[in-house]
Length: 276
Ligand SMILES: Nc1ncnc2c1ncn2[C@@H]1O[C@H](COP(=O)(O)OP(=O)(O)O)[C@@H](O)[C@H]1O
Ligand SMILES: CC(C)(COP(=O)(O)O)[C@@H](O)C(=O)NCCC(=O)O
Image 1 (cartoon, helix red, strand yellow):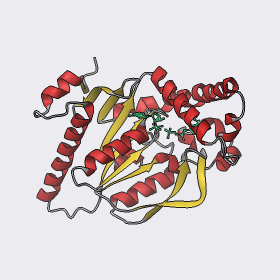
Image 2 (tube, protein in one colour):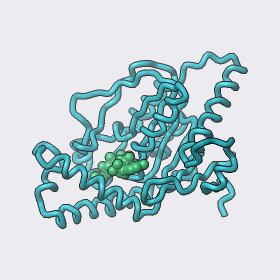
Image 3 (cartoon, protein in one colour):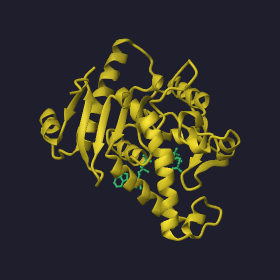
């Protein structure tokens, strides 16, 4: 048994919360994070520390685990508590497809070798230093690439949610690592079969979305027969994304403060809380 984490199923987390109307996993996650935020506020006040840096929450998990959807939902929960929240994805710090092709890394897209760690660490350092209007590249899931000549700008907020498969990983070189800048880390977990189902469902959605968009990566696959299109996606899933999950993403789960396990219908079936 893994005693590092307190394993909570719905009946158990319900007993830890004050009586409330909603007893789903989301109420418990908000409850825990609000306690964490309060504890930080009190300790900074005691230190008389002028605090400019936002609270940074990292969200990790497999490709298609639901990280970006989870981040949006978490943002809504935290905004209800009058917090200003920004979301940034680590996908924005991938090398462009052209750069990956040039380096022979296309088969390793999403692996640590495909990330611009310097840019990611620099971005997080600037966020934590309280700097404003921090530029970063933008990745588009529809294009499956960085958007040329377009930058995002991070505006200071109370909370930054940084989500992505790489956020708890270690770059090869010594030096700073992205998780140095996190105040709290959440790992989204589920059965591999569920992950594959969600990946394929999103792929089918992207095929339909881009059926009439010849410039798009998915256009070609929207116009071959479905069996062939699915064979391509399954190959990518097993040869790239599952390999990445086994070798690089899943081993970072032990670094998370909270592990959220989701069922096939995306409901939260368990929450594991790190006990130290
Ligand atoms: N809570 C949810 N309810 C319904 N669908 C969800 C939920 N979370 C994720 N999904 C779906 O699962 C797929 C993967 O989710 P996404 O947030 O894109 O994952 P990730 O960012 O981890 O790759 C998407 O098609 C998304 O719409
Ligand atoms: C951009 C990604 C590395 C990360 O995906 P995400 O977690 O945002 O779904 C991934 O979608 C990806 O492109 N993987 C390489 C193989 C593929 O799925 O196309």
